[in-house]
Image 1: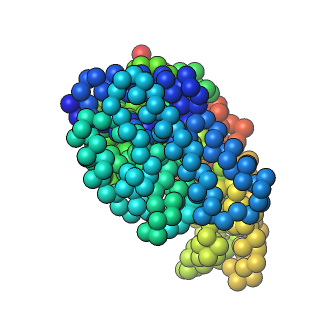
Image 2: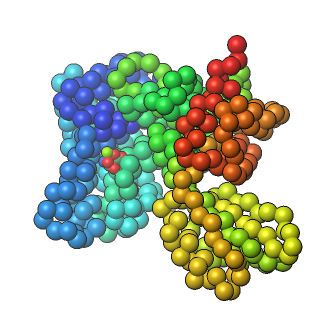
Length: 404
Ligand code: ASP
Ligand code: MG
């Protein structure tokens, strides 16, 4: 018997039948003797609908009133779920963020959880009640309702799991776990039974949208085990934790990120301080740089290439152009038609030949590599965007399907 925090996303509770289905899952876990804290998102597209409703009335509403409005979506879900559980004859209480003791900073729309006073929740659990908490919200010191930013119910769930020392935080979605590649694009993609926090964070930042980096970071920091699973079928999902038991696979996943663009700064002087000056221009413009490559100096000049988010490309080019004289480059070569393809795996740290396998797969698929970067648990290559899906498929085949 243990304490479990279960979080259900908007798609799992989008209508009455969804709520009743989820209530059935909760009832089963309760009857096994677990203490349960259930965190809910707003039903379906409720949050978007509320945002639209607000826009019809005032195109520039204050953030305070937006939070007042948006927090109602989660509150409605919590009350409806409690009613569904009541109907099953189970002891239950629903709580708003405030009633659950969730105190946040005062940044309306993007508040941070500062502390959770769990007395109320503990008291309810002691009475063997199921506690249903409205996700995504809390209250600031002045008593105002705040929200935690889009997708913030995950954060509520992980934070509650941490302070309540839950043995597990389960996130139910319409995906049944974390896959070795996007299953919609790579038919051979497999569901992982386990993955480490670090791998999950790399995959999330590479475009796997199942878990937000913020909640994975928090789970890692607080030592909360996460499970990603579906509410549409009764089967185990993927567990995210610090160390996974050794599986035979060498890597955990292959990901593609098309929100990337490459800039080459050509004909820079080959002397100390040049890289510093180039990247200071970008950091002053608050542009995040990803892969960096510098050519060997030749004839007193060198080139520096790097990638930025595609959405930052114009700003990056503009800021470099304004400094053209000071930086002394001859030209900028820019390409937005690129994609980053990466493999991620904690097992890489101790295995050799992983990069070779990846490059062999790309060679076989005749995909040209523009740039390469590596970290302890990740190898990324920059390829032409039109080659990206083929690259992912070839790499996936090499690591997961050719084994025997
Ligand atoms: N309902 C909010 C949103 O759609 C919070 C959440 O779902 O986690 O962003
Ligand atoms: Mg939602």
